[in-house]
Length: 312
Length: 131
Image (cartoon, rainbow over the protein chains, first blue to last red):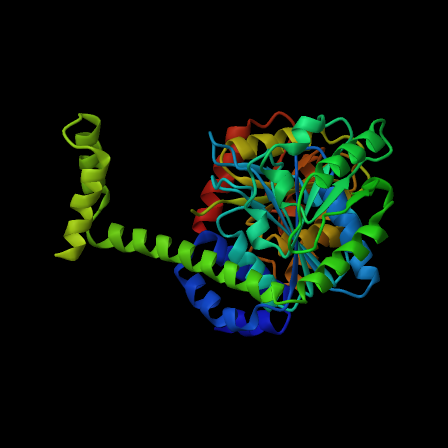
């Protein structure tokens, strides 16, 4: 397929088109992913997550510029939420990344979550593969403004950065499960605001209580992304983490976990598609929902009925 | 799920973007995915963003009077870079007497102040589907 050949040669327009096809679930996208997959596994993926308003996009932009200075090519995928009511979205991350405009070594793509929970969009994993195959040496994926449970990015990225700002809570907040656990690096951004030192200390105290059997204790860094302060140290720390992963088979372990997750997700999607195609057209679907609603049938029995049709 | 993706940008030196933000919001509420790039966009920035984001539509807002320079330049760059299938619409302060020249340059529709959102939303939905 021509778009794949051009994508693999580094053509940005082909990459953009391929992303659209994959995002739309176009039938041709399966072919694209199949052809592209053997060319993946080289790019370093960095995830950036944190609550809304913590400065993720500004940080991502400054970080990308720092890596561009270090001669890396950088792809950026920025996810924003879709409206649960209208299905539309306002993708407002790119606007924070104006300084990357005109740089042929950078490529920014905005994605709407399209109802997917967890922090990313359903197609984000596949889109990262496209960036990888297109030859970007570093790909930064920025999640939606996340709460405590949007931990999906940890599975998609080699290095996960959790961004906080001063005033975001106390020591009890710092030990709650969820998003803070997935951090490989913690960043206190907007560190020029009051309370920055206290927040960093709370996070350090939380980390001090933990155990790190694999040997990586997440560092706490301070940045002022809007002034590009602290970005060099952050880029150095990301490089250190990459080196750390490169040892003792950790990268292989990560790749295996990822392959498991991707296989699971693909299997589920394919299974549902086959079920819908073979034994559950919309009319039958609606009829069964009616029966469940009217309490003639429970959901599990309905599901069994449908699957029995496959076995027969 | 075929979502319509729209780039909303203000090329040139305008300082007021309330109108563009309102339009962006109406498009979002109509179920579209809006990439809002805001103020001080050069034609090159607009085209680069449109191509990277593979948008269906570019909506440009100009209040400054520089539309006869900026809009044809954007359309020309799009043609050069293979983006001629992207629908270009414009709004803001654009005198009637310039509309014909702009349409000839590649701006498909121009909406003045006070245009109801239903009008440009319907136009976009109809045009993108046909394309």
